[in-house]
Image 1 (cartoon, rainbow, N blue to C red):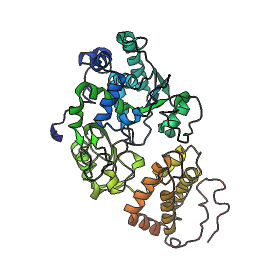
Image 2: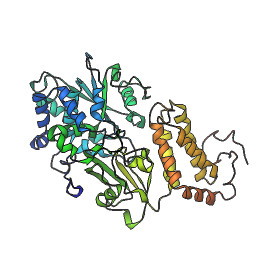
Image 3: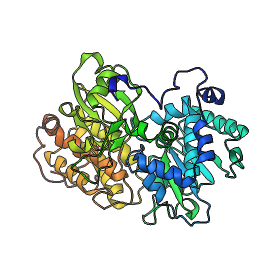
Image 4: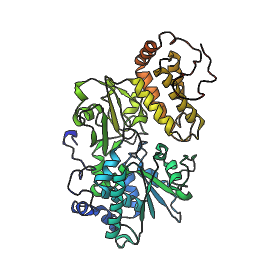
Amino acid sequence: MAKQSYQPVLLANVGKPESHTLRAYEAGGGYRGLRQVLREKSPQDVVALVKASLLRGRGGAGFPTGLKWSFLPEDHPGPIYLCVNADESEPGTFVNRVQMEHDPHQVLEGIIISAYATRASTAYIYLRYEYPLCLRRMQTAIDEAREKGYLGKNILGSGWSLEVYIHRGAGAYVCGEETGLIESIEGKRAWPRIKPPFPAVEGLFRKPTVVNNVETLACVKHIVDRGLEWFKSIGVPPAPDNPRDPGSYGPKLFGISGHVNRPGCYERPLGISARELIEQCGGGVRQGRKLKAVVPGGLSTGVMTADEIDTPMDFSGPLKVGCLGLGTGCLIVLDETYSMVDFLYNSCRFFAHESCGQCTPCREGTHWSVAMLERIRAGRGRLKDLELLLEIGDTIGIIPGTTICGLADGAAWPIKTAIRKFRGEFEDYIKRTNPGGYQTVHPVAWFEGNGSAGAGSAAVKH
């Protein structure tokens, strides 16, 4: 399918009058797929269809959705739960908000079909607290669907029942991790759980649970509606030299923010390059300035340089240039005027604030990253600080095996990519702001004016 002729599917109803209402949704063929599934397919048939589609989760990790569903125990008496991750608190990410505000019934139909496939009797939408319009639109959609018979007891006479509830988060980034989300729904502090057991075996209320992202479930609705061939005609097939690569099929929502002329949410096939997204969708870099760096998929994925923006935006592309992955597919564009020191400081400050504190490497590593960057920005930096920051970045996270969840990996990748790819800028900043002390290797007294009580009480002065 030619990229320039691509017709949006996930965003097809955005901009249409009353797109958030059941009346408008049904007029465009809404809930037709649900009717067909309940009439013609078993739950196993839907799981097999989604598995064959090679749909990968759109929330960040890219795990095959049908495979995740197949982990549910077949003989479990129930209940089985479906948790919908609508927390979307990854910095730079806002595409799920667009879906829920403008086309809530599309999301809801995907939820209902997916709950049927996984034999769930209850679904919880874990919604970001800062999305009040999403709350109103999704709750109205649930009420309309229940009144029409798409929810509740004996849906459309099928003998299957489902209830959907909205659970509002309290503004914690760690709740985007599936077990942290589950703990939060249970009314507990959102400390991610040690795995195994995985949620498919022991999740919400210690029952089998599937956790999927909003965009992922919306894709399920279209796979059912349009078929396997349509879905796999979009995107990128598996790499022939990598037997573990399931490909990157289907449409994707890309958010573009930062220093561009037209920030917003755009739908394109997986595999489009970052350059095409910035130039064709985002209208290029603002005020005709030069591009400096791009965050490819939300802050946790790290940064690409201007020389790397021809990287394909699929699940494998950003990995090839040293980033954590595609992530949410939401680009943050930085122009030539923006300081990478400030970028890294803002990144580290966010992750330090959002760490739940359960794992020592994450709790301490994120804190000391901010501490060093505060000192660098205050004119007391050392070149050795860059090595210490890289040591932190290389040793915290679930990938090196030191933490329970991936929040620390998200904190590490901006550190690793920013310093390694823009090392000259960091060194120049340190030398320019601390010409008399940048070469010291001894511990430095805490900057007296930063307001952090006691942080430097044990520091050795030079």
